[in-house]
Amino acid sequence: MTGMGKGMIYINGRNIGRYWMSYLSPLKRPTQSEYHIPRSYLQPTMNLIVIVEDEKGDPKNIEIVLVDRDTICGFITENHLPSVRLFEGKGGKLVALEKDLKPRVELACPSQKQIVAVEFASFGDPFGACGHFVEGNCTSPVAKQVVEKFCLGKPSCSIPLDTPDLHNKKEACPEMKKTLAIQAKCAFK
Image (cartoon, rainbow, N blue to C red):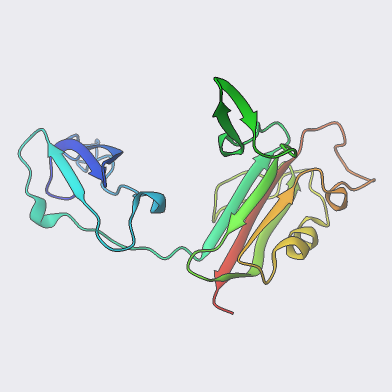
């Protein structure tokens, strides 16, 4: 949003947030200059971008950069609630669309690609974010092999947290609620 002042951005009628380029950090730079457009907001051919500028702005310096994400990640804990996508409203009540509402990691590659490598998998107490996951003190030694079994060679996969293979009988921290963190690579096969 270089060149703009302060305002809102809409993609195909959906708000992606406020920008405030004129608010500068102590380093005399905007606190944020890049804004993510969720893929689900984009249409295959024509997209409408509406920018509502509150101050003086010059839109000729705005850049739209397309990024092809071949690294996909998932992070979920045993405490996670089921996704809202697994429910629908019927007669004023919420009804589950599936019988199995247990936590699971779901991965999906973009653009006809397949999962070709599992770069990181930890079931225990990993931390970090996509691209920067780190194993914690308690982790299953078979997590990567289990994820590979579920995902390699597929365009998408789902790994339930209650998969028996993930739970090692000699776990270092059996009383702890576990987290599953995965980073995988997508490519054309």
